[in-house]
Image (tube, rainbow over the protein chains, first blue to last red):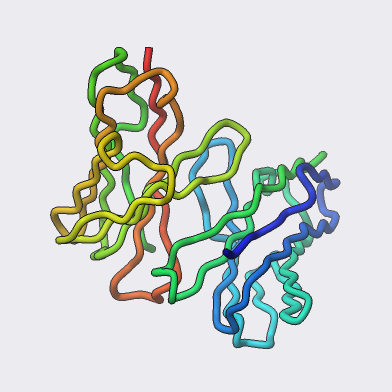
Length: 115
Length: 117
């Protein structure tokens, strides 16, 4: 079974600084998708960034970028120029088409942004 | 963007009663929707996959007679917690996959907080 591991239960960063959240996963598939979701105190899940495994280029969305290392099964999220609004729980997630697009989530990393 | 709504946002009920939670895709059609449960400070746990016009697929350990799912249209799925008990108190979140979008991306509703007294 696929598993997703986030080894950092909590992280903190100073406003305007850069922080990296770690995620590793286990799969025997070669074609799959990886995501980072943000869950602020409102508890609304918000898609931050999406990566297709067959693409070597790392995905980027404004201040958010990933470091996707397929061989190492690693998918870290880098947040640049951190803002107070970035404070949230961040979940790494995995899916593949053969599973009917069911998402497997990591345990989450609580990010605190200090002013 | 793709928007998913849930109703109600909060519900408090007495033990033994049934509670229905609605999940709607507002601006897209969704043949497939998903229901999750989340305990405080924990991750999302997939309960079941809801498919329009067919029976839901439940994850291992989830009682299908306890958590009834009906996906009667391409924009609406409902989760009914039958004979609710305090241990069913939790945050329930639905998500929907856009039939016209990429097959891998899910859009989430805002969640429903259920409290069973």
